[in-house]
Length: 70
Image 1 (spheres, rainbow, N blue to C red):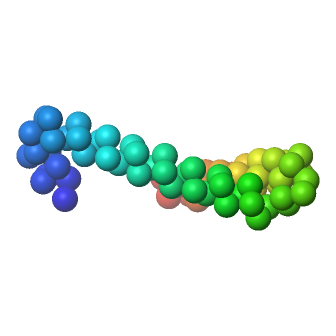
Image 2 (tube, helix red, strand yellow):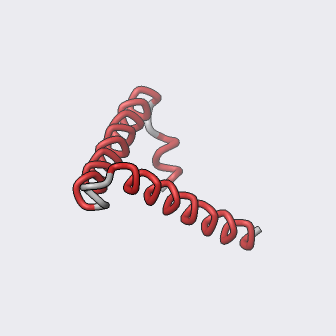
């Protein structure tokens, strides 16, 4: 798969990167919107704190897992 990507012309690679970038931003915008609607919608501060803690926990777990794979 990566060999096929390397064979693409430079201009096609840039277009492909732009499409992927837009897809990532659209995904996170959707996730953010869902969290705004469903994660403690009446308490904004609690929603922010819970999201932050959840993110830190996920990052810590993935950091530990990837460190174990080295």
